[in-house]
Each structure stands twice: as structure tokens, then as C-alpha cells.
Amino acid sequence: MFILDLITTLSIGMLIGVEFCVSVFINPILDRLDPLTQAHLMRDFAKRLGGAMPFWYGFNLLLLITESVFRRQQPNAALLYTAVTLWALTILMTVLILVPINNRMMQLEGAISEQSKRDHGKWDTLHRLRVVALAAAAICAFIAIGM
Image 1 (cartoon, rainbow, N blue to C red):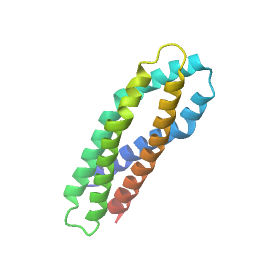
Image 2: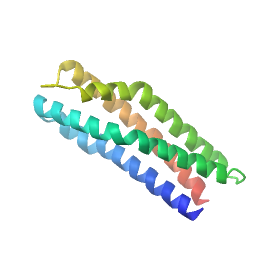
Image 3: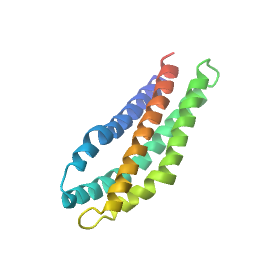
Image 4: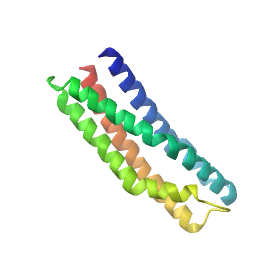
């Protein structure tokens, strides 16, 4: 159980750290760049993160489900169920709303258009909500695992 707890905690913590960095450090820097450089970097980030993150999100959901199964008889199981639910809803929101925007960002050619700027602004706002939801799920999971 200790190894599962360790892997779950590290994997979730690192994923949230990456998502937090995108929101707090990367996107504000991108917003200050000239349109051509901004479009190029947005396309690169969208491809790189868009390729890796779905698997990492799914892996973390499986870890949370596994934790929930192993701890189902413990009094803190409800916190893990909450974490699983929040994580799954975040994945659903990501697939339905953020992935289509990200896919458009991967197709950027030349300088970024006004529509692309609006799309990126919408993505950035929703991404911040995603980070908050993931952090809430992580807090629930970490409290449950630590009890």
C-alpha cells in the first residue's frame, strides 16, 4: 500500500505542478511575445503537452480508483470517491471543451489571429478552473491517504 500511496501522491503532485506552471509561468510569457513567435510556441506547447497529458490524466485516475478500491472499508473512503469524481469530471471537461481549443492551437500557421487569441484566452481561463479542480481532488486524496 505504501508504494501505491507514494506513486499516487508523486504522480498527482507532479501533474498539478506542470498544469500550475503552464497557467502561472508559461501562458503569461506567451502573451507578451510577438504574434508570430507566440503562434509558433503555442503550437509547440499544444503538441507536446497535448500528446502526453491525456495518458498522465488517465493514469492518475486509475491510481485514484485503485486507492479507492483498496481503502473502501476505511472511514476516509468518501474523500477518495470525491477525488475520483472531481478527477473524472475534470477529464470530461478537458475532452469536451479544452481539447478542441488545444487542437486548434496545434494548427496555428503564421501569426496568431484575433480569434486564436480569444480561443487561447478562453482556454487559459478554463485551464485555471481545471487546476483548481485538480488541486481540490488532490487535497481530498492526500488527506484520505494520510489518515
